[in-house]
Structure formats: C-alpha cells, structure tokens
Amino acid sequence: MSARLRPMRLGDLEAVLQLEEELFAPDTWTAAMYRDELSRTDTRHYLVAEDGDRVVGYAGLIAYDDEAHVATIGVAGDRQGEGIGAQLLDALLAEADRRSPVVLLEVRADNEVAQGLYRRRGFTEVGRRRGYYQPSGADAVVMKREKL
Image 1 (cartoon, rainbow, N blue to C red):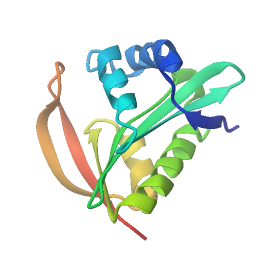
Image 2 (image 1 turned 45 degrees about the vertical axis):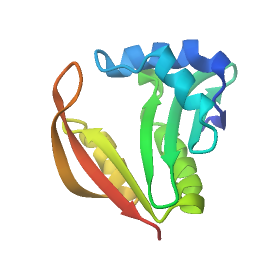
Image 3 (image 1 turned 90 degrees about the horizontal axis):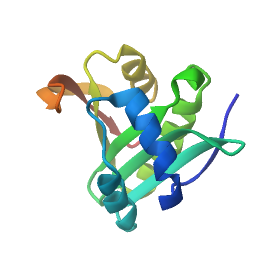
Image 4 (image 1 turned 90 degrees about the vertical axis):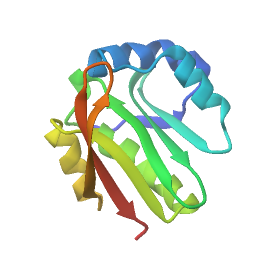
C-alpha cells in the first residue's frame, strides 16, 4: 500500500516530531530545526506521506547546483515494509535529479534495511563517519549516487 505524498507544512511538525521520537531517539531533530529547514524553500524540499489524515512518513532533501543531500527519511514503525520509504526516496531523487548531478546521504551503520534501499536506488558506500549521530555516538555510512 502506498501513501499520498505532499509538501511538508508547519502544521505537520507535531506528527513529524512524534515519528522522529519513535524512530530516531535519542538523535532526533527539533521543531526549531524543522522550522528552519522549511523556511529555506530555495534549497530545501520536504515531503510527508499521508494515509487519510495520518502522517505515516516524511523526508527531506537539501539541493544545491553541484550536489544534493538526503537529509532525512522516516516511516512509522507500523507502516514499514509497505514501500512508503521507497516512495519518499524516489520523490526526493526525482527532485534531486532536476537540481544536481550528485546525491549524498548518511545512514546509521547499523541500519541494514535502509542501506539496502539506498543500494537498490544506485547509491554506493563512499565512507564512514565515526560518532556522527549525536548524542548516541552511532557511526554513519556515507553513500553517494550520481545522476543516471
């Protein structure tokens, strides 16, 4: 089952922050961080995935002329495995391809499921960042995809 994607709005922050806490604690983004991201409409592209009136996922892209970065992707735990993460990633990559020749991202080194999704979309590992995620200190795998 897929969800309907639309641009993230400030009114979505409560639901997005609840998902952040469920998925990424203790390394969560704050409301202030999301407000700042949403205010930068020239270089940012944030989406939510909705099923009815429920936000079941979200994703964000930072895009410049020379490179883009997948900033975040999250899908509610009870909706993982339904293709919503792939749907969000594909939408981000379509936007990235309009803006930039290269897409980079960091993913937790222990998140094999997400790494598999990224590999299936053409990403390859190009490095590691020790202690990248704070405050947990978890390592990140840096991945790169060049425009197809």
